[in-house]
Image (cartoon, rainbow, N blue to C red):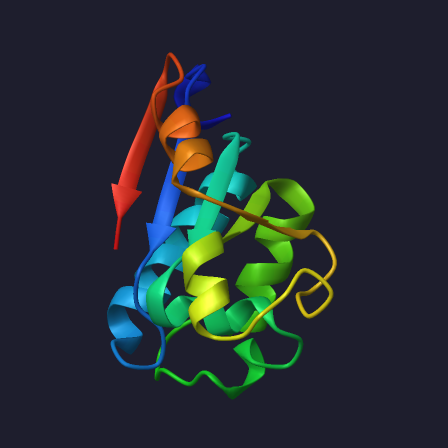
Length: 124
């Protein structure tokens, strides 16, 4: 774990291909935390909601950035990924549409995760 800290990280990605640098930062920070042994939760909201669907991360391109599919896979495997309920509904995305390992949940769950003792929330 990074510096022996008993903390968790909650990252909310609010951007997708509409703001690629911000999107990439959210995924990179979350994947880095997972790699460092930090309990990590990534929330897909706004335009990043599309990356909950199979194949969508592969269409994301940003020069000099790690491939989004690799980052997403690492986060799913080592942390948790949640798609915002309202964001999913607005885009017609249902539970059977998302990648295995991604759940759909709402604001109450985000608040609960963010307010756990030792949690740090970041919004991109």
